Image: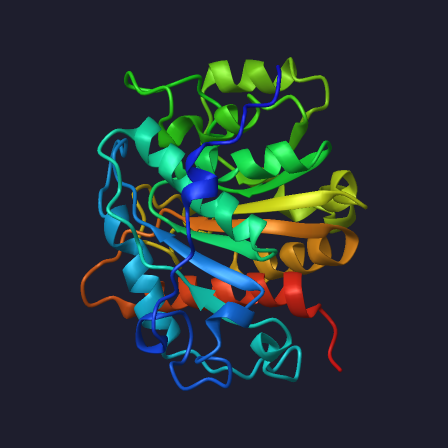
Length: 312
């Protein structure tokens, strides 16, 4: 299908940055007063419109942002404060449109503006439907984009409960762009129509199912990414439900935190990560561990992509 024309709101979107005490990471970090110099721009976007079980994703971005203030800046794996290599800024969370299509157009404008400024967008959701809007500027820029997708669910339904842009259709809407292929990791909740869609994809969709984790080979997982521009979308329910209950559908037999990092690390080594999102956190009051885990994961994702994976 033809590439969709740019959303007119992209040109009209002017980036405004949050003050340090409301941004991502420690407000006292070295680059806190220079958001315009940052190479990574966090876009909080708490869309919650098509959730079909547990709710709370509207509060996910602010919970992650708040938890990020408690992260240590020093990374013991990389043996440095990696944010100094790239700089982090964040934009204010907008008043989100009432309909899902309107909200996705709005997010498309924000992501497009960040890309036009020469920076990497990192969207913090919100439900997984946000990816369908965030991906559009990338689909226009890259002819051979690969989406690396961490999730419990395939998200390949062609609409769900009457919503074409449902969270359950996020990857199907991504694949509406003919120049995008998909690598999904951790899938363990899938419908028969989605399974048939995968079978008919002729290699455009690569799925690594949760039940086969003991036989996974990371080199096989990242093989379709080698030398390509890559967009990473991480649904927090891709993690095992025992370590991540704060999501709408916490699912057993999922990924561990370290297993996720190993795949992300290798993906960053073999490809060029051009954008990312982290979605579906539904905070549980009093259970700060989940918010903190999500914030730590976001920082690691940024650092692998923009600071590198090697200790130096």
